[in-house]
Length: 106
Image (cartoon, rainbow, N blue to C red; front, side, top):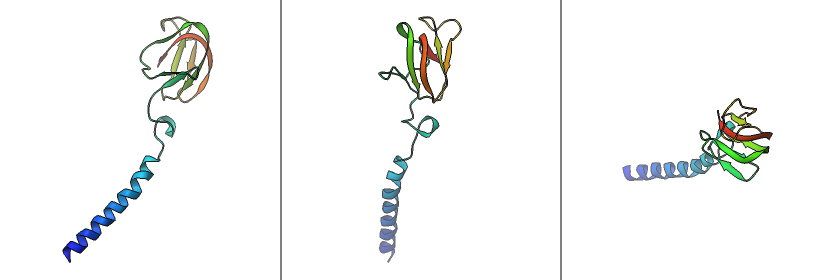
């Protein structure tokens, strides 16, 4: 009798885990409840910046499309080395086109 109860309890536990695991993996993660949980910024729909503490620079000042998928603000500068006062801020979770030369996470 004890073996039967343990077997039934084990079967129920396996069934519960089998049902709950796919449900948990389907829940959104990341900043603002969407994405894959990484703090990234997409530049011009082609380049992914994942180290927001490092200064990223374009080859020259221009209009740059930023898709900030992180929870941090992105500061845009008119210099090639992220120095001076920022000329624009891309808030976390937003996107837009800004004139600039370099950018770094705030």
